[in-house]
Image 1 (cartoon, helix red, strand yellow):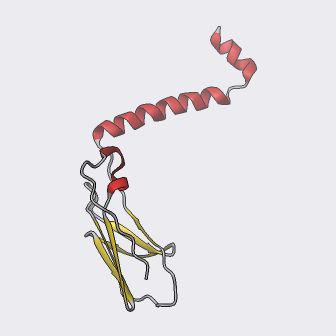
Image 2: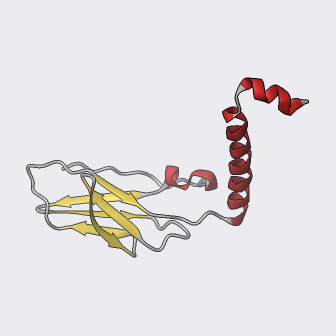
Length: 117
């Protein structure tokens, strides 16, 4: 049995909410139970066992009742979280700048000199 635990942070960082997320794992004979703190804006989580999608949950817990005691398992929890409006605008500006820089980089050097004149 392997169990990972963490303590609750007094001041959670809004820019990286996963850093301080409390996650609990309980392993018993033939089953593993996962539980985590809710993440604002997420309605559905997808659970993967050893890279294979094994289900979706709407809450913040999942129980896998089909594990073997002689195997090691790695669980991954994925979800899509909408960006707050301020982050969307920041991303759009960064994306526009990256597109412009990418377009300029594609122009051969001899043509760049003509563009500057």
